[in-house]
Structure formats: C-alpha cells, structure tokens
Length: 341
Ligand code: KG4
Ligand code: ZN
Image (cartoon, rainbow, N blue to C red; front, side, top):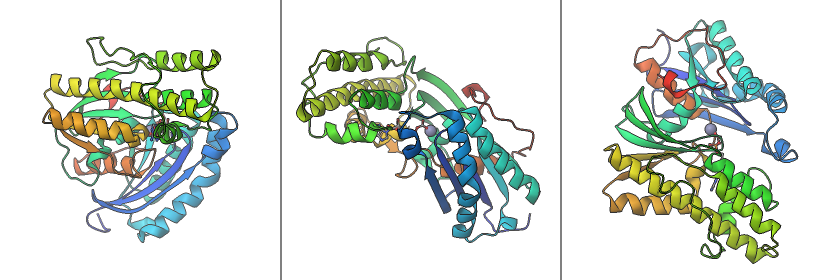
C-alpha cells in the first residue's frame, strides 16, 4: 500500500451528541482530533433528541472532517483506512457518521471498519500502546456502565452491567432535579467539592448483591424525595446533596470494580468514559487499587467523553491484526458486546 508508514486512519464518531473526527498514524501519533459538541443545543430539552442530533451531525461533519485532515497534514489520498462508530447509539445519529466515513472509504478505495463505541471507551486507557494487556475494564459513561474482562484485543467478557441508569445518566438526572444544565456530571462533581458527603445517607444500590451488576435508579429517586420533602433550600444544601450523591455512586463503583478485578484475577484496571473524570472516583480508585496491589489506568484527558481518537485506536488494532474491513456494515443502535471483535 502506498502512503505513510505506519499507516494513517481517519475515524468518525457520531453516536450521540458529539460529532468527532480523528486522524491517527500507527497507534500513538494522533495527528488530529476535533470534536463538535451539541450540548448547548440539547440543554433546552434537558437531553438529546435523536433527530435533532442527527441534523446537527450532518451540518458540522463535512467541516470538521476537512479541518481534521488539514490539521493532520496528511492528504486524503494518503489515508490507509477509514472507520466510524456503528453502534451502540442513536440510530439517526450513527447513520450520519457511518455513511460519511463509508463514502470517504469508497471514494478513496480504502477499507472501512465499523467500530463498537463501547470498545472505543474500553480500550482508551491504553491509547497509544501497541499491545492491550489483560485487564478489567470499568466503562462509566452517559449511556453505559460496564465491567468487562479483557483477555487481549478482541477477547472480551462482560462481567457486570447496570440494570437501570448508567452512572453518567444518574449524575445527569440528579443534576437536572437540582436545576443544573445538561450534562450535569461535571457540575455535580464541582459542587460536591464544597459539600458534606455525610449529610444525606443515600442508598448504595446492589452493593451487597453478590454479583458485579449495578443499579443507580434508587439513588436518583432518593434525591427526588429529598427535594420534594423540601430538604434542599439553599446552596449549602445543594452542595451537600451533590457530595452525598457522588459519595454513594463512587462508593459502589469502586468497591464493585475492585471486587470484580479480584474475582476475575486481573491485576490491572482500566477506567474510561465521561464519569472516569470524576475527582472522587479517581482518588478513591487510586487508593483502593493500591491497597489491593492493582494497577489502575485511566483514559487520558480528552479521550474520556465521546471522541473519535478512541474509535481510530480500535480501528488501528483491527488493521494491524489483518482484518479486511468492508463496506457492507450498517448501523447497529443496540449493538451487543458479544459481536465485538
Ligand atoms: O463518555 P460520555 O461522553 O458518555 C457516553 O458516551 O454516553 O460521558 C458523558 C457523561 C455524562 O453523563 C456526564 O455528565 C458525565 O459523563 N461526566 C461526569 C463528569 N464529567 C462528565 N460525571 C461525573 N463526574 C464528572 N466529573
Ligand atoms: Zn460514549
């Protein structure tokens, strides 16, 4: 194949409310990564309306793609392969990114790789590395909360998942109840820094369930009751509630993740997704991992919330593993884990 060595990949991500394009050379040379967030447009509705997201992706994708190619310094003709998120996600939103990247691949006569969004998050703590070690992955995002045992690239076993809300979704819903703008996770985290985590005793869903699954909807309901009861009247109450809520979510995430790592005999944990930016989660995880002789790796900043670099990274592994790719891939809004690889 003519073109630069190591090969260059262009990936598109459009599964929810972020439109992103990345150009990656080899495994570690991220030549460009551009992200256009629709958060402002979705703030009004307090969440993402799929058709609105789809139209916004369509509006910005050509421009973002051009700017990523320009930034990368690699002409389109020198790109060895293309990739896009095929699922899971919102069907109308996925369709825009997938069709666009497929069109580029077809025009350039290069392979196309459909990529599982969760696999992108899952492997992002090892971004840049040529080999994926054996590890226990904690994916905590707005749409997913999963514990995945990774044996090597392409060999995954889900050992735990949320039975209701995702961790990020729980932060967003609690924040919404407090009148905070969407997505509220980072703001709840910020307010929590000034609050008393012991003020409200919120339920720790499924902490003692004996399996590795999660449930966050009880915590959110408890927040609603406290607000309806009139317990939250001033800024300090709000900060205390944020701190207590964060404490409950992090307590469950850390304890269950470490237990799953020990049960799966993994001495490396990789945490990813938007919620892996949470300050308390990071410090508690560091401490708990140290106590148990476990190495903790976090997805790098900029690669925690949705981005295309993580999609390109998975595609780079697929390309290096000799996968052929194909243009017949369709969107798979409820893509299952079992189909990854
Ligand atoms: O990974 P991501 O883009 O979501 C999906 O792919 O679904 O992450 C976004 C989520 C949102 O729910 C947001 O509120 C949450 O991550 N988030 C946080 C923090 N920063 C982002 N949640 C808690 N603490 C944070 N610091
Ligand atoms: Zn995501």
